[in-house]
Length: 546
Image (spheres, one colour):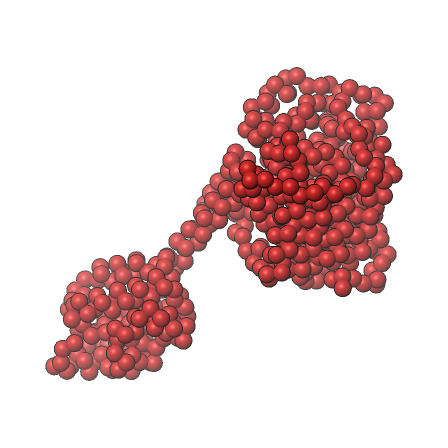
């Protein structure tokens, strides 16, 4: 059963599918050229990913196809395997298979938990890469197949020696996509207007600009997967990148669709649909894709609400492929470059960049590091470093918060959590009973610092009884449990009694599992803090020793 299929919005779905196809056509051709696989690969990707993601996905109004981030990954694969492109499409097929496994394993709802600064830096880096890589075709030179750094090194020579016809078309394309009035853009999408106007101008007035060239007008033949030992590591690694990036890209777009349609997508089903689409696209030599935000938004605004619109968009592109291929051969590469420069600019996260001076320093640092590494180093390394930085900073913040919740109480104070009766018991034995109260979770980030803080308490050895209150600790990890053991042993080393106050079941389970509770006699464990303080008072007044 197709998720969300309904014929109650048929008119809107038909309109949405047509408009989405109109917008998708120039982008698919441009992404195909930018990837190095050819314009036809972009069109194949839009057809197969768009069709199968709609049929098997979990976001009814979403329109899928090649996107900027996926194209950048594919461009790297094509550059590496230029002599054997089947290896690049094998990575696409494997990536689709991994997405299906992610969906079947039920991890779809966790994919979007990636910290926002990491996503921001990554997307801004992707946008910068697209702009840099399109600089050459924008002025009439062939796109470079090497690294981004190599392309950047060649930029001065490109701009100093432009192909005049291509430069004019590139400027015209940029002008149209940026300056088209909104009322006109609602009738004819600016990318399509740029495509048509730039192509007509190129054919009749500026024939010196490089063009797409021959495009097949038949259905594609399967590209059989191939893999050999020398390429296994690269292919599998890039397949993982495609699967993770495609999943994140799609599910973030699904959230946008939810907000616009007031519905809820099925994350795991969406990953399965995207995986099927990418696997089939790779099998037929198409670019990998994901949920496309701009195309989905346009579809929804036009009235699309069900998978009918996404599937229709793919079928219209198929019809264009079979009937209008010869016309597409005359499209100037500079026109497509101008369209993609606009795409790259839109991908950059201007929302965070506009507030970079006011945003938290840690978030800005993570964003900047990930963005720089995305452009200058490696995409997957950039994300990995960003996740590590974000995790470390998060642990540091949580550790500071946990330390703030550690209170060492020897007498009643205004911020003390003690009741009047508890304070009375503690006050009668001031200087002999010390209460350690922890409010909140205990984790490895703060464990050692908690012990050090206790070791720094002046006149620690003068106390006869230590009351360790864990009643407000909802959860504890293994490292923190061993820190509790250190606290218990520290009291024993000073010949002090230690009384434990009411632990929650999850905390008890961890402490028992690590053998910590064996160090505390059962008679020294109490459910309530008042009972524990009364016990401590008896120990102080008794003549016995621990």
